[in-house]
Amino acid sequence: MRSKAKTTVKTTQQIVTEISEVATPGVIAALPTIRSISRTIRRQRCSTIIEKSRPKHLLYLEIPHCYQYLGPNKKFLLHDSGKSEQRFFIFMAQTNLQIL
Image (tube, rainbow, N blue to C red; front, side):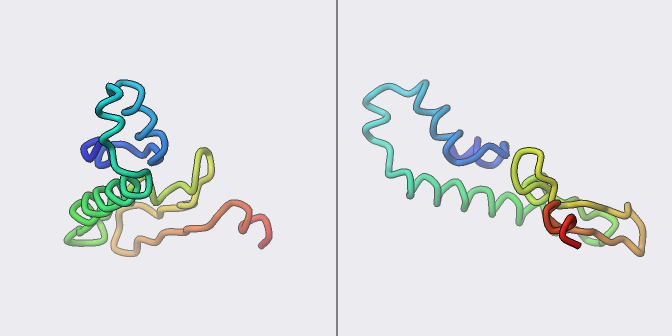
């Protein structure tokens, strides 16, 4: 479960569902609560993101996929100016952009 949390952008519920579909009843009975599983998955994702997100320079910064989208087909990173000394990003929900 921890390795899946590090390598996928699926929701916690999707990960739990996938695991429970292939797990035996004994394994399922031994699993902790959903709240505990969610916390573990969040911690694994945060540690992975922190490890990967410390670039030496703005040129090498890569925004993780989970920070580019608010959900399926809901972009949050609207613009990345590209790798340059004057690099900038625009983060905004599409609905907020329409309001502007």
